[in-house]
Image (cartoon, rainbow, N blue to C red):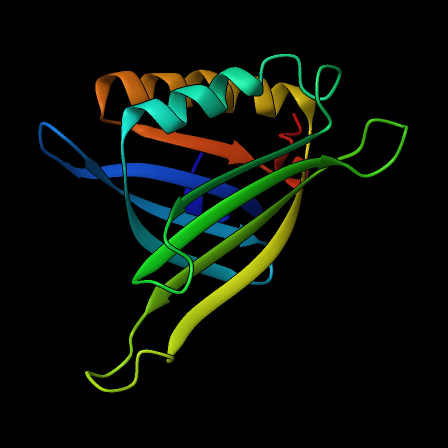
Length: 151
């Protein structure tokens, strides 16, 4: 799927790695607003989070993943939650990075958006997250439900 034609999505891509950490470029859009940031992470937290996505939302209907340091250089979070009892799932995404000058660390780029997703999109994203964390390479994309392909 061409990312230029996507409406809502969350994309995590490994862009650099060494033996201890890797850098992720995180991009998100809800179709109207778009943002990106770069954060550093390790495999273990991503693998743990990917495991919690198994059986979502039946097993747990409120999941949070955070990377980077909020109010630091850069941060990213994704919050999976049930909107109602009909199975509608929302994902709140927060991206932040610092563009502050040497003496003003309060200047930040920040965006918080929500996308609606289908359970099968979460299943695919979970598998891609496991691959991303274990190989420390690749891309994991969570497609919003407004990206359903029609024939």
